[in-house]
Length: 77
Image (cartoon, rainbow, N blue to C red; front, side):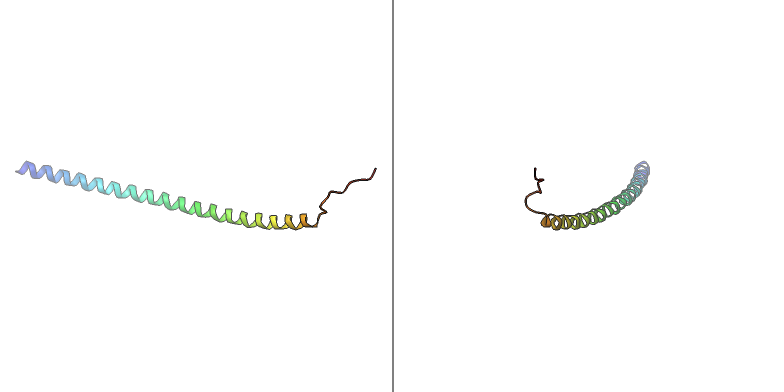
């Protein structure tokens, strides 16, 4: 009976250690996940800025094209 109790105690300690190692690993993964989320948010912000700039340029180009004659100018011979 004593041997069984010692074995169970040892297995319990090993299980506790494994659980603690899993908690540490989960914390590491959560830290990496948070870093990736922050980076993704930054990329999303920059993409949004670029989209805004592109939209302004598109509007400007549309205005310029609207002022041009429909037929290109041709030099007379």
